[in-house]
Amino acid sequence: MEPIKIRSLADEALDSVVAAITSGEFEPGQKLSESDLARQLGVSRGPIREALQQLEGKLVQRSPRLGVRVIQFDDDSIEQLFHLREALEGMAARLAATHAPPGWADEAERLLRRDESEIREAQARGYRQHSADEEFHISIARASGSPNIERILMSEVNYQLRIARLKSSMRPGRAEEALRQHFDIVEAIRSRDPDRAERVMREHISSARAYRMANIG
Image 1 (cartoon, rainbow, N blue to C red):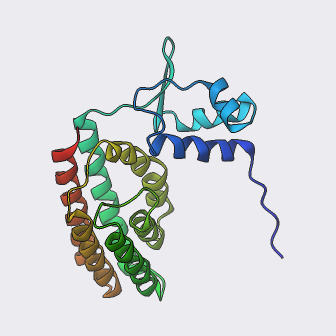
Image 2 (cartoon, rainbow, N blue to C red):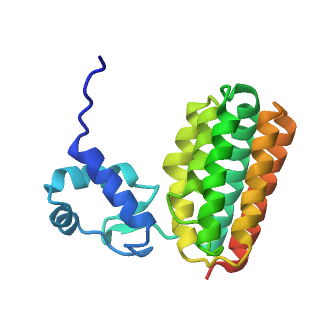
């Protein structure tokens, strides 16, 4: 038997605030009120305060006169985030080519087939937040065997890039293009080819960066 895990109210509040910000419920630069958030979530201000403290520098910023606001990024900051993501995910793919457990590639392909079906049904309108696209990248970070890469990508870089993605549109065909790149990444990892795995992942993120920078508005 495994011990029962009871999540704290602060953990629940953290997840709720992250979801609200990264889904666009709160605009970049918008002020966040502890009392309003506590009322909406049905908790005291303590868990909200703790959640916001954990998100400082990641999704929110605090200043003495303005209080807590959703973080804002200029174009240069967004481009730097993509460069950081390219380096980290490239290394994650390289390490996954060596450390991914048996059966990882088959499971990843099943995930991508599901994504392919969703894209077809949505008539290529693009990936949704928390979609198979995001799950795919998370799975590679975990398969890398590097907790530090997983932590930085999942709790910082990708959080912030979700905000940037909210302000850009998805051109027809981009989802299918990204999906083909995903299949190439899986094949490189399945082949246990670290050089190719890193290269195709970097190319994938680089193309995403070029597209996003051309379409952020």
